[in-house]
Picture (spheres, rainbow, N blue to C red):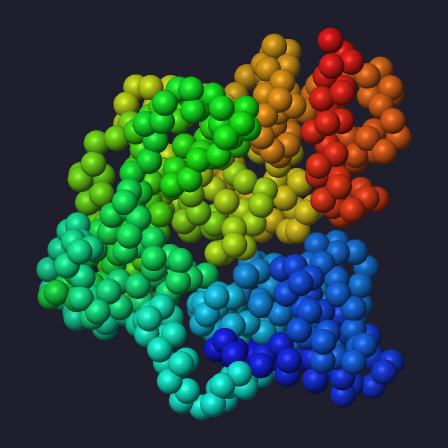
Length: 478
């Protein structure tokens, strides 16, 4: 079954009450993006059920009779599909919030439900409408929806008229045009929140470009002007001595890819792009991106997004190249983050060539770790590998330099998995000298590529312990 509800309708409470009515011997498992999200269910479940992380359900031998997946819109659609296939005999309830801070649920509705309806397994869809936190028609709820535009809807597009792309004057926005633009973002993205509305209206480095037909907004692109940072600041960022806000693309290239020189480049980042559902497949998104390319003259254009094969293919067709894959799952899409850039200046072209060589070294290990930690769609893994260059085997000096950057800065271990594994294997004596706990973390994550949950230690501790363990190895080896 699926349960869809607006915020404040008691979805999680109702699920907990339903579990409490099951026979005591029923084997019940509850899962969500985090254990804290399932707390409301257990508050009413009267001791029924146990929480299991999604990665445990996908990789360990669990056979529950009843499986409850709460806030399902925050979990990758591919993972939801895998859960449904993995437990064919279980009664499964997928529940999510339709509007509000927890997420819009649009990806769940548009993609997962469409998939579920094609399966032979019976599907029962339920919606909760009556609020329990306030009275029906309470003016406060109406006020919140209006002020935060949580129920914004795009205008229906007309057919067969000329498309026009332009930069939107945010200071001249009226409520009708604002709702058209924000409604597109709500429909197109998994988790649009009031803070997104705030940034769209007020962020000084943000601009909104729209595509209109007969005056109605059918597409919107939010872009951010970033980069051009001082070299001294880039150096501090690369060493983890400082953080920067409002520069997401240079920040990830500096701290995650270990390239401090990237921050000095002028960048235009695509923050969001959305097209009206009734106007898709008309070339509107491409027209918007081409319009943005013609409007600005930076060193490079770039974007960060929850990766899908379709989005990767779309950006590649527009001249973008994949330069980084992240391990953390995007809060909006639940998919691993992808960083794609379209270089313009010679400096940017040289940077992209180096980044893609590093990615070619790293991607095999990273894809395996992604699949072990949760699940990685094979089609997405194949799309990551598409058109990557053949990089020659790294030299010992390149390996050591990569490990040195990792142990002395904020770069995550997944970004240099290729270097860590090569370096550890070439220094067995230093590994043997580590204490047992640190050695187990290094062997399990770096050499065996096991999931964080399979290392025999609390995940936060294991993630924090890897860097100092590698630092001790690096120092001991001279």
